[in-house]
Amino acid sequence: MDMSETSRTAIDEVDLMLANARLRDELEPYRDESIDTSTSRMTLRTENEYLASMLAWERAPALPIASWFTPVLELPSPEAIDDETLDRLLVETIDRLYAEKVVLRCTDHLSNRDLYKIIYRDILPCCEKKVEIAGKFLEWRCIEDTETWLRYYADAVDRRRFQEEYEVDLPDSEEPKFRRDLPG
Image (cartoon, rainbow, N blue to C red):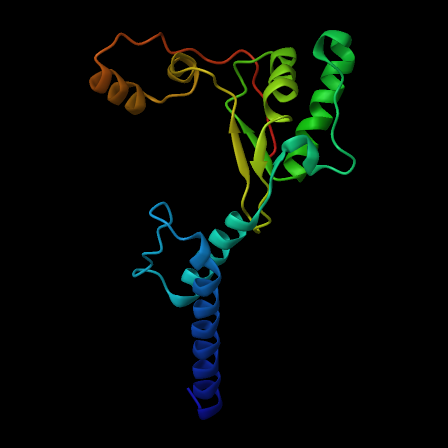
């Protein structure tokens, strides 16, 4: 390493320390026992990314997911549309949700109409923090009960752990009926 690389590394390290101090100061008003700032195993760069993501989370407004779109995403009632229209709107809506960093998981047990109803009834009106962090998504698991997860999505290890922990009979494992290749 030559002298210019050494001085550049030192300057980078100073910049990282200054950024770290600024981030910690900005996070101070939000600190309570729910915020974990123990970052002893992180590099300074990684710690700063972590602190910046915490700060972004704290400052982000909680808005109905439908309001994350311009204009606001409004869908017709599931009862008001035919299957063909619903199928088209479902594909468009899933793509639009993904564009706004909402990823749907565990949907393969649902018919298109049932998935559309969940998006219409549960996802779009739900208030969530919209956080703009590269590579971060809001993951929405479309499961309403543990039995559905055990039946369609839990692997053998998860099923065994659940059975041992709760000492219950498990539902039969099944392949979901509606395989989807969703973005994300």
